[in-house]
Amino acid sequence: MGPVQAISTGLRKTLVYSGRATRSEFWWFAPVALVFPMLAITQLNWQNAEILGIWQLFVVMVASVPLLSAMSRRLQDTGEEGRQAFYPFMPLITLWLGYQMMYWLGLVLLTSSGFGILFLGLFALVLVAIVLLVGFISSALIAANVIGMMLVASDPQSNRFGAPELGVTP
Image (cartoon, rainbow, N blue to C red):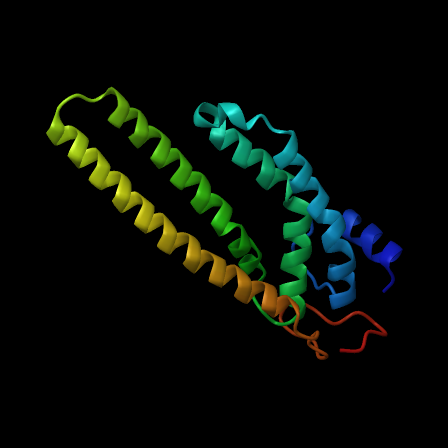
């Protein structure tokens, strides 16, 4: 499948999570599909992320729908579960949660008085940072595993997600 056909197929199947997508179809479409979330990230006003952070994360996830559907079909083409396509987005969610925790804990620390509360707040801040670091590293490793699964050749036989496209060789 060529680039023009892959891009048109990917855009046409934006909301289709069933079926299969060949390696060429996915890898020609993925750079185009990455444009939507990247535009969403760059165009959002991140100065107000403390208050509207959940909405900004939601906008980025909605902009990622074409990429998620293509990833899901690509994973199913290799015989894997399509829902694993959501795993590479775990680091973004982890970072957002961490940012929110750090921001609100920082506000508590700035407005608190007393040495005991300050010490407890600093301890909580350090604990949150450690948990976030471990969470981010583990979710990044899981995301790398999913990306590796998308590099595998197509399943040449019919699998539980359907038959391979006609004329496609693994």
